[in-house]
Image 1 (cartoon, helix red, strand yellow):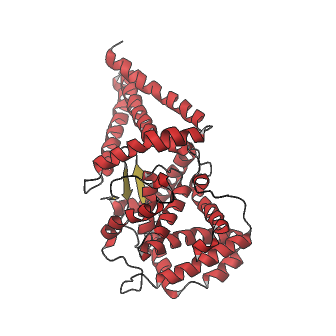
Image 2 (cartoon, rainbow, N blue to C red):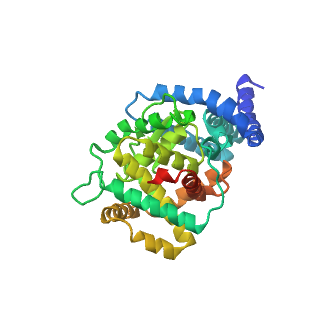
Image 3 (cartoon, helix red, strand yellow):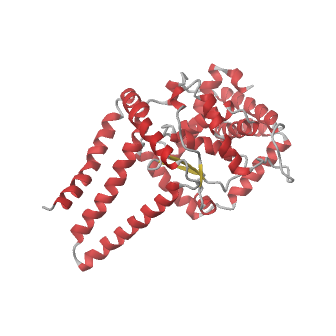
Length: 362
């Protein structure tokens, strides 16, 4: 057996070993928190982010495209080898390549799915809530949104507008985490700036507004987005950058970072993020209460929501459905048993905060 073949077989063997380790670690979240998320991985994330940070473009975007092309090429030559011969060699190469990507993903970030929940870090007691409590939360968020909306800019169409666009939002984004880390040290650290995705318009057809790539430590954002949701989207990806993997937690952390941010348009964006998820949950539970509260939206808030819906309706289609299914499978494979529905659990965290500190929503 050649040295090259032996190396490839070892790399392939690392995948089942890593899967086994991952399944074991799920039982010991405290250990993952202490020895991985807040130690080894935190160092890895900050080193990678520091290296890629100075680049004005997303290194991850170029890397992902390159790795995808390589993977596609390897799949094609492996299929062709079934006719021309040498299938075993090509298959080993393909398996070694995919195994290396998976193992690196887990080392650089993936084990964060096994850490303790942010509700425990924040001292929140998540429990089943009554529809009355959910309605009260929604009402508080509406009044908060209406108030903040009067303090942000708008364009000639009367829609919320960020002066300076995404570049201004990217530059200001770290201020939210600077303040939030004073309460939660886990969210502190030195990281590279958020990166705009060059192919943002095409990415919109997938329905994806941002993505964190562990290989580069970059928070990548689809800048073909409304100014309403752009600030909270940036902070969502930055939550992943800080080692919080579950989507519901990243959304909730983004909300917290928005509310601690000194700029009103970040606070408004975070409030609207929380409001949309909470109202969706209320609609599922009590449509009548939902319809009653919708009437409390200010005209300006209504314009922003209408514009957001119209914007994303342009990109609905089969591509988005397929990507949604792929994302659903990915989330479930990493222990989020509700798949994409896990995004809705953000509401449970908001309700827990509302019960603990209702003044936070005033």
